[in-house]
Image (cartoon, rainbow, N blue to C red; front, side, top):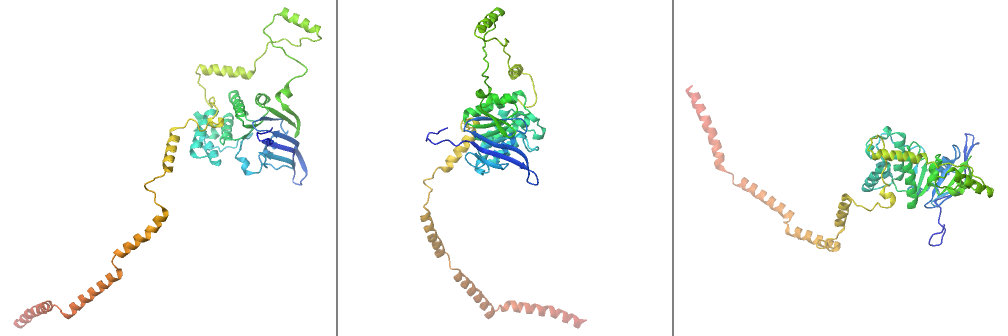
Length: 410
């Protein structure tokens, strides 16, 4: 793949001779989970990773995420080692078993993971509403995760994997535990993300799911790559051909068989085409919904979240408009009230000095108070109030005289 500048695009995932050997306590090789694996996943590609249990699929995914260290070989994600922290924010992961906090409800769970990606409150709220509607959990968003069924937990796990709008999405058994409705929705979502240019790595035991979605696939066995190619390259039978027509009567079929016989061929099977069980199931469900029949649990998911389709900025809400207006008014300059910093700093000392010069001197005030106190004390000492003293003395004499007269008479 070549970009507009002429340089070769860096694959989203690139491995060369990737090997992982698990060892025992004595450092002896115990299991060769992955051996000599070469992979190349390009931008915007839906890539399938297939194989039976123990073929190395989950081990490969863990090495891509930096959760396991390779034993040998080369591995890069977005051109960087998987352990590079800057790569993590560009990846969304739905593991085979979702490890969610059981005491949180769906909304709290998505809000928590949104905070881990440092999304602001407004973006988190908008994405949570869109994702809950998309996976059909709006009606049970208040229930704790521990009360969810396995299929409902897979739905909230898928929403958690998409909360950061990842460039590279890794889905390990995404349809496990889902009913046919949820499985169909997940497949439609994967196809829609691929159309938008997202890169998806899909690992599943449901071969029909992979067949419906992927552009290319790799089949592993015993940790080694056994086959690789597009669905058409791997699934098209080269030794047979089918011709589909309207319903034919027996005489016409016999005539066609005679024509084929003259060319050294024969009709191997004559049968009416049979629809897929998934199509029949979805048709029955759609008819039941049209009849307004009541059901419980997770509902049918809504449309794909707008932010996953690159439409996050469209359809602004009232809250968004208010915030934009407030931020715009705060950012607007005020012409009449602006003051030059240098002029302001220079004016402050003049104001202080004028106030100090107009204020009375504190020392003078203290001296005046002292002089007044001294004058008062001198006036009091030099000119005592004799009238007061005489009245006091006279009063005492008057009190003593009656006593003495009384005593004489007695």
